[in-house]
Image: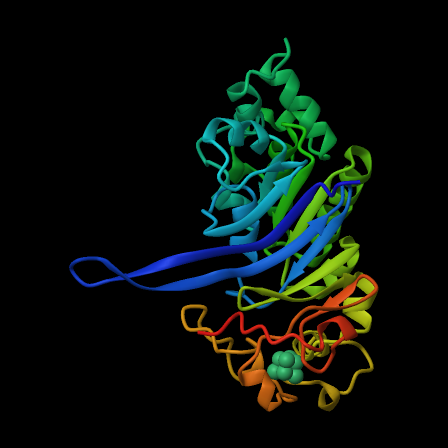
Length: 333
Ligand code: SF4
């Protein structure tokens, strides 16, 4: 069956303007040739350091960032370049939950107004009052209906995130971009919110693009994981493939940096240096300036994608037969 979401060679570049004439002097290549697919009901964890392009990718899927090129197919329809009116209709089926529920919720709106804003806007209350619709949704996310006339500041952090989830759920989406949804919460509250997302996924067959820098949280919810570095997906596979048997030196470093009981600090691979600026990406493999295993070819040639079953990786250390002849120079500055 066709995947719910299929992204192909997506690029989202932001112009850098300079001088009094505001001329375009270059581009920040936030997303630089990303391809991935997601099935209905599936959760894909999207991990990487801050600034690697994770949030821009999530926003581009929802049409909140303009894609320079490439394709985003959702439920069989091409979103990139779609007319605004059609896009809005499809947008109902794709929602987003943000890291900080406080700044993403209008402080002057009551819980009821926040949760039912989309329903009222799209004329989808179906004969119910806003009060009834809000009470149902609050019940679904584990909030007490007595809170419907309260304002966001009267809820705890975890409750505010539940409000955001109720708001996202109101339009009965198929797909939700969860952008670091539990990073601002205490660990015990994190688990509760993850459990809620898991219950809702099972009940409504939801698909989540779960953006996080926290691999232990990703392990709790994702079935597959994609690792992003400097605008590229450098490795993608099942949770077990990526978190327990990573192939790419960057993923290996990310995972080895997670403190685990019994692991000697000296056994960790330490990532040195910083991720280069996406305004001036290095030629060849984007990770080569920091890679402990870099070879001469890494400085000139972008590694092609190699696949071992469902596990794909872009690294010259790992090549499969079909890619050994590849000489692509994508990513050259
Ligand atoms: Fe390191 Fe080369 Fe692999 Fe890039 S392609 S991760 S620089 S070994």
